[in-house]
Amino acid sequence: MGKAKSKLPPLVDKDLKTVLFSNLREEHLLKLLGLFKEVDVDYIGAWSVAELFKVSLEARISVRAPIIEALFFMGDSRSEGSWTFSDFLVTLTSFCALSREEVLQLLFIIMDGHRNGSVRREELMEFFAYVPVGCKKPVFPVNNSNALEKFRQGKWTSLEFDGLAQLCEHFPYIPYPAYHTQELFRTVILGKAFWEGFDKDRRAILNRKVKRVAVPCTRGAEKVDVKLPVRCTMQELLEFSRRKTAVNNGKRVEAQITGKIASKLTKDRDLEIQRSPILSLIRNPRCMYHVPHEEMHKLVTQNSDRPEFEIPSMTGARTDLEATTPGGVVARQKDEPDQQLLESFGADESSDEEQDWDEESEEEDSDEFSDEEEEEARPPGSAG
Picture 1 (tube, rainbow, N blue to C red):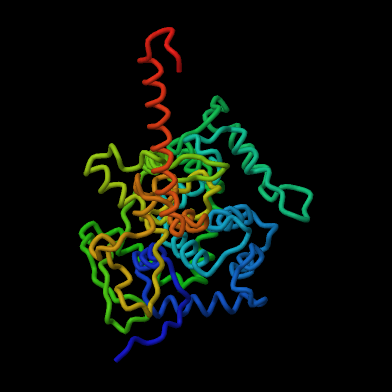
Picture 2 (picture 1 turned 30 degrees about the vertical axis):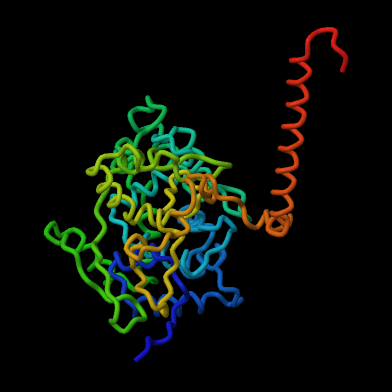
């Protein structure tokens, strides 16, 4: 019996794995696909930021507006001002999967737009001065700005993550918009009960074993091992981004030295950090905390004859990633000619003519050399 036709659009391997790590299964994906199509009233297969506000039932003049706009920016994988179904699926499920500490980390990332590792006082003031489109005054109350003057008696210029956590502990209304935004989306995306159960499973210390689950739309014929994502500190996220990425034309790209000098322990921890929800939802390369995924080139199609999660090195076939240099240039053997270029100049048809021409050139050179030797060997004064 053949495989059933997939009701889901094709998903990149890493995207499908990300949602499976968050305990989502086929029935959840189909439900979210229905929600995506329901909100997409223009039938263009993409969401704008207006659809994101619509599904959250939130007005653009509330204190949650800057969080929602920042979330939309981070999830825009193509940097085109729109969300595909993959962007919608991965970004919102990863956002809903965040723990309370990770929500605070996300707030820190939103404020630290340049990825300096600290939030300057001016950046906090700029965030609190957010004015939505069509309004004339900031949405945040003046209490937020006053809190900056009261914190540490105003004797500070920048805060690292621990400092921001202390600020939010003293003034809980500062992180309130971020926490409330997550509650809104958890209600819409599969319901609060689902995510509370996910939080409980993730908090369990002993719940670190690997589960084998069915790949969606394969009727259980194919399975994959999944494991709940681990927790990461803000310092680990920052150092991971610095080691793995570089800036090129305003975008975060993979660093050329990635993976060359790291120990096995570091590589194993890097794999855990890479699949954390907070890094999974940051898909826009123009976000300075974005980390490109190594398997982004591989497309998962539910109707393919080969397993979706087959490791390329075990098939014996060279993938596009293996056939390219770190800079993305197609690798060619040193002595391998460009056959297409040779054929365009008729190299195959004129190969015999070129060989004859080379032989004639060698004969002429040898004749000229013989004449010169004969002239040098002739005694002075002798007639030619």
